[in-house]
Amino acid sequence: MSPNEFNPRLFYLDGPGGSGKTFTYNYLVVELRSRGYKVATAAWTGIAATLLIGGRTVHSLFKLPVPLLDTSSCNISPTSNYAAMLREISLFVVDESSMVPVYAFDAIDRLLRDITGNSKAFGGKVFLWGGDFRQVLPVVRHGHPSAIVENCIKSSTLWPCVAKYQLTTNMRVHQDKAEFCEWLLNLGDGKLPIRDSPPFNGCIQIPGHCVMDSVVKSVFGDELIHDRVILCPTNDESLKLNETILNLLPGQPRMYFSYDDIVSDDDNERAQYPIEFLNSLTPSGIPPHRLTLKVGAVVILLRNMNVHEGLCNGTRLQVCHMHDHSIDAEVLTGMKVGYRVLIPRIQLAPSDSGMPFVLSRCQFPLRLAYSMTINKAQGQTFAKVGLYMERPCFAHGQLYVALSRARRFADVKVEILGSTRQGTHNGDTFTANVVYRQILN
Image 1 (tube, rainbow, N blue to C red):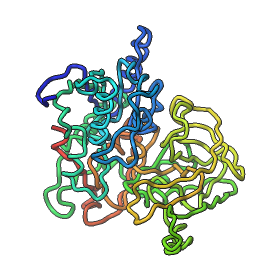
Image 2: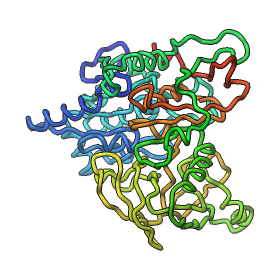
Image 3: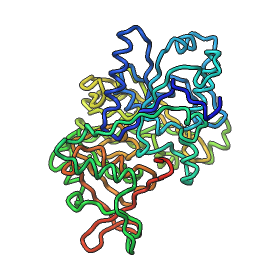
Image 4: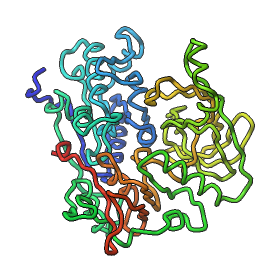
C-alpha cells in the first residue's frame, strides 16, 4: 500500500491529558455494541487498559512478544479460534498509542493482513488509535532522540494514511483554572520561555508557588492519603523516597525476602554471580529483594495478573493484611475500586534489564507506591502531585506528564535539587524540559 494512499478506516484521536479521550472510547464501545457490532479495546499500559470497557493490553490482545524487535511477529495462527475472533471485530480501539513502538504497529498490520487475507492496511479493519504525543514516547534504552523518534508510530509508512481528529478542551482541570491548562499545553508543546543566560541556560522556570523545600511534607502532611503521589524521573529516586515515607506510617513493618537466581543451565555461569550480588539488584519493573510493607501501605502492582479484574501493571492497592505466602490488598484504581484481592509470590524475570544475564526473582510483584516513576504514572490522575528531582527530566514529555497528573496549580508541589542543569537563581527555580518538536509537527 502506498504511503500516500488515504485509508479512511484508520483514525487517530489526539488530545492532551484529561481532554476526554477515555470517555469517547467508552461511549463508542457502548454505542456500537448496542447496535450489534463487536469492539476490541486495548491500551499500551495496563493501567490505561483498566479504564476501558473490556480493556486489555496491546500485548495481550495481539499476542506481541517481549522484547519487540523489527522482525517480531504476533503469536497467532491464522487458522486458530483466536484469529477467527479477531476477524469478527468491527472496531479496534488502542489508547496510549504515543507509547506504541513502530515495530508493534507494523507487526499488528502484518497479523491482520495475514488472518483476513486482505492486503489493505490492518486487513481493512477499522482502527481508532488515540493518545497525546506530548507525553512520553516508546522507551529506547540508551537511545538518542533520533532513535526514539524513529521508534514512534509516526515513523511508520502507514502513518500518512491515518485520519487525524483532535480534542482541545481539558476536562480534567477545574474550569476556573484555565491558566493551569494553558500553561500545561505550552509546557508540552515546548513553548514556555527558555532562559538564555547562565546559569541553567536552556531551562524553563517553574512557577514559584509550586516550589517547596520538602515535597514529602507538602504532599502528604501528617496523613499518608492514597490519592496523592510523588513522582520522580528515575527508579532510584523513587525507591529511596518510598522507604522514607513508609517510616512515617504507624504500625509494625514486615519484610519479605526474594529468592534470586539467574536464568542459565550452565552451573559455571551461575557461580559467577553470587546470591548477595543478585540480591543487591533492583532492575526497573522488578520488586526489591527486601520488600518492606505495613498494614495500610499503598503499593503498586508490577505485573499484569488479571486485567479484567483490574489487576495489571500499574494498579495501585492498599495492604489490608500480610500473610506468609500472600498479600491481602484492596484495589484503589480503575473500575474495580474497593475489590479485595490476594497477591501471591510469582517468578519475575526482566526482559530488557541491560545486564549480561537474566535475573530470576521470586517475590511478590509489588512496590511501595507513595512515590513512583513519571512513566508509571501516565494515564492516572491524583488529588495532589509532588515532583521530586535530584536530576532533571531526561526524556520527551516527562515533565509534562508529571505536572499534568493534577487538576490545578494548587495541587502541584515541586522539589528540585541543585545541579548544573537545574536549581534556583535569584529566587527563581529552573529545570530542563525535554521536547522533541519533530514528533509534535
